[in-house]
Image (cartoon, rainbow, N blue to C red; front, side, top):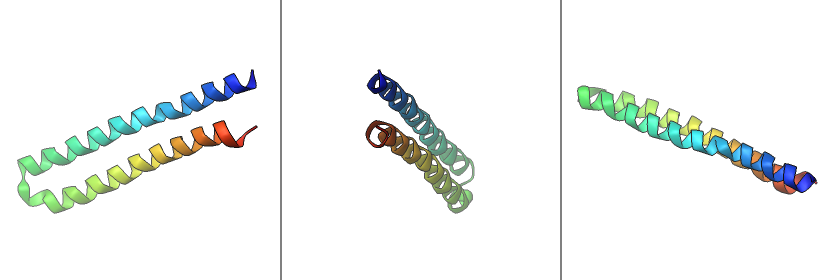
Length: 75
């Protein structure tokens, strides 16, 4: 029973990875729009896009770390 609960918990923790994928798509589309409208803002928009990618990937890394710790560390 404990193994089943661990698997359900790890599956729930990995659902955050789907949110991270949506966030990366949103950040990339949001970085393209201002450059298409005003190309002189490319450098400023690129910095914001990179920080958005980094924060979104951090969430994905934390979710993966939590899923693996649920499966393999807690016994």
